Length: 548
Image (cartoon, rainbow, N blue to C red; front, side, top):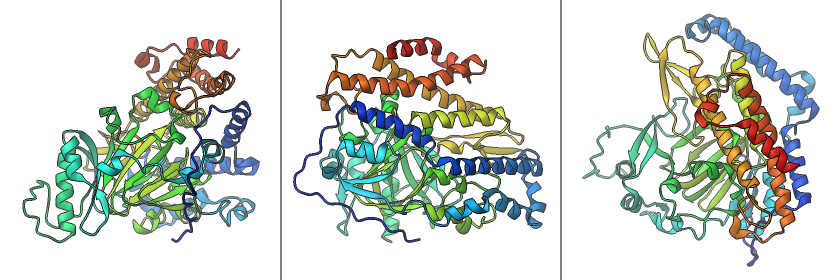
């Protein structure tokens, strides 16, 4: 699929990017309107369409449960497959009303991504044109002076800039990081298994792998798991480098992304280094708690496919329950009948080739999948702030409502491994900022893993919101703090602007706190109060007092 992208805008002169100010009162109001519109941006017709899709997918899940005895006997699909009933169910699940279908013959927006050089894009422009409307962009020039760009990269025999594994091994060899093991390169249906390795161990595998790629004599390579003809690829992901080395200064946090409540609350736990050879990839997913993310290629090339949120439903199977592993799963993995929506989804996909030195902003709720087209080293953050926490809350509400109805909105995917055991893999946090585990259950799985996931998400959201609320309320009007869009070192704005932003942030937090209090009052808070020893009601009163 060839999708046009606009050419990058190059640096014009020596224009300096303005320091990000605290939002003016009018910008706060505009941001509030944008957030409200974002939650219902598709209009009345598309809201009706979404309700119809949800109804059809719920019906499909019910049928799947009947055919498979609640998901415990997948052999129950055999007869419906042979009789064509699975195909018919897929048509039913993905079809829209005729008049609505005519509206989707062409994408509503061009299949391209905006590009800008950092010298040509102020913070205000980024906020108004991309963050507030939840729109992706590629920004060049942010990593030009990074320490990582000069000290973590070398040149190979062909003149290409590649990760310097010798240097990384010397500096950080004892660090332990999650590594995803792929059966082969590219996108596959098979889920990679995950293990931990030291950076030195990974560097040794990298050396052996590239010796094989060049068809040279391996010589002293002693990688213990190496097998002749093995096509396995190892992708080092979610290395929490900044949390382990907070003073090293590998990179400068880009100004556009400084308003980060998630890492502020969680001790930099969602700042990662990724390192992988050509062919390593990340499965289709949306980020943890529907956070924003940004990713900078220190070296190498990535190919992204981004799906606008309004087309997420096309990514699920004909039963409305399983997310496709990648955008071409229906063709490449021979499961076309199970994923009838992918043909349509590809029409709306934005394909992005991200070169070295470029940074991509991935908005909330945009599913995406990524492949390394060359040996690549990248810096990646997940982040939340007042513009997208409402989307985090909406995701959590969906999970809780699904449990209340006796099903998971994104149920663990079952892989039969023998006659009496089933591996339940929690697929919802794939590449979402944490290492993912598999759970071994009996063949009749309970909802315990779903409830645990909801509990983890609820605790995480509470920690983020409560820390930010207390931070705002303990800030005096004469003190410059991180309640601004940027951190204190970039601010020289008025007290009135600080007050406006503080109220904007608390106004975004308050309705979510009230929703969490309803969960606590219901008697089933998924362990929140016990795990956090929190008083939600007290914090709500304090926020109301501050706002009034």
